[in-house]
Image (cartoon, rainbow, N blue to C red; front, side, top):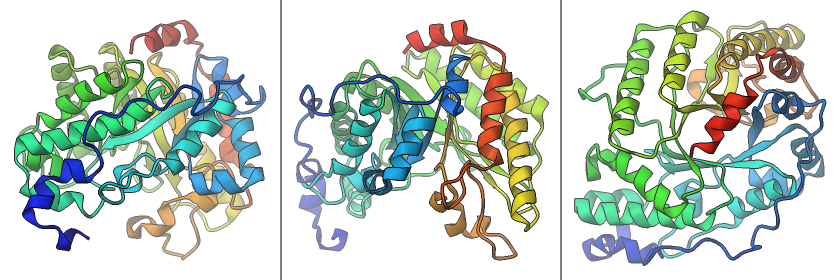
Length: 393
């Protein structure tokens, strides 16, 4: 489609996208009332709730809509839900003038019907953009690009105004492995090119306008392992957060993706210092995309599952010690729904499928699920501090 759009249609992309004005929140009752929580006291969310924590998973709406077994498991184990791709621009605005809210709406309805908190993911990312957006931004002035971004945030966050607990406003904005080309450490992206580094602050301010009740988060990757470049990136995170807070940017939470990799070192003390520094800023911490790449673990499924669970427990014991930690979310909940097997950097050398999540491909519990429950039960009780932090959005 993008190759057929001329300059005029590109620069008129805001209107073409069906974003001619701010989008009001969905009508009252659109997603149903928030019902009593459905999670079981003896499951992961039950154990988490006793310590003032939330636990949940990213879910694909197509599976959630068709599998009664998956619905039962999500209702039983999770107090937090996030759509896997459902609220990304590529899904919600696949074509100009034809927004598609159905996948996201179905996740929201399920969450409200089961008394679950909902996370929105993600308003601004350098990936998951519809094909027609890149040429639009390339030909737009900064004012036009800003207008487009503003109206997109109005559309997505505005539709779910009042029903989303926290929004990933920006996702993966810092450069990761390899040379850092900019002094500020920002990742090259269409948004940075079109709007400059202020796009981050602007996105948070516009998200606050669209939904004043949602806690607004910066979600970031590659912060967990013990490498010099990771330590440098942690420093850039803290410096930018300090600046954002000083400028009055309404960032209230920081998301640590936690895609853990079995053949990379993890230093509990260094990571504990980092999340402690985040907590000292008054920022709530969310573990947003937890899974464990098992490529360094044995081929034997039982041994591998045990090693995955042990790694998860080591990580969670550090994370849950911090009073500012508010929730833990896995990226997918069963092994049949992992992205790792499709990524060339994460394929096992023996050709076996990854087993990175709490349930196996048949949705039966694995030691990882038990490790979650054990970690929540053993964690210090910071319920009062967490409740106070949740009140500050």
